[in-house]
Amino acid sequence: MDNQMERILDICLEKMKGGIPLDKILMEYPDQREELKELLTVARDIENIPLPPVRDEAVASCLTKVSKALQSQKKQGWAAKIPRLQWPRLFYFPSPAWAKALAFVFIVILISWSTVSLSGDSIPGNLLYPVKLTTEKVRFYLTTDPEEKAELRLTYSEERMQELVRYLDEKGELNTRALKAMLDEAALAVDNISRLPKDKAIACCLKLEHLCAFHMDVLERLKSRVPALQRQELDNAIQTCQHRMEWMGKVIRNEVPIGEWGPFVLNEN
Image (cartoon, rainbow, N blue to C red; front, side, top):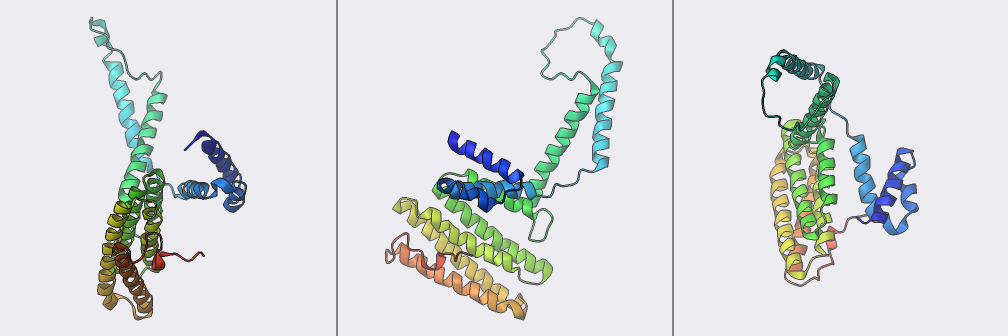
């Protein structure tokens, strides 16, 4: 990101904090609209993530240990009379308050790290699921290589499918938002495939073809477990996967040029 884009982003972030709608902000920068939209959307999602509660017991326990350690250091003051080598101190806390503050920061960092790690197994409806999605978005938008971005789209599509299965196991119904997200992630992969050299593009098309076939197979197996009222939506998704798999085959066989994506094109809504 160049310096000009960084300045524009800072300005836009301040406007968002001031309550100006995203669409209105983007209208002011038509040349940078698409890149800004991605970055500002991620920033907004991060801002809206619910913070995990910090347990008072954990904070109290940590501060108690810090206090005991400081008291222990005071009791060992006699040791200072013994001549010894003085090693440079890497950290210096002028008062116990600094030690307590640092301990609290460590607690928050640990909780944040644990939250992101635990969110990996969450499914739609779980408290940590928004953290999972936002982490994925941040990883995607920090990735610059088109091939790696396409790989991430395929990975996220497969992850949505796994969530779909786990949700059905737990709730006994089809999560239609996860189903749509699974199909959308696969479709979005072609945006980055179009930017690749032909050999790499064909390799990614092969992976996408296999992914669509895998989706179709899994969804077929779920049909008997899905409530009757939701089976039509599942059938539609299976049909979409089949059309996409067949289209990828045409691209791989050079029957359709790379860049014409047929059933992968998403409707703007």
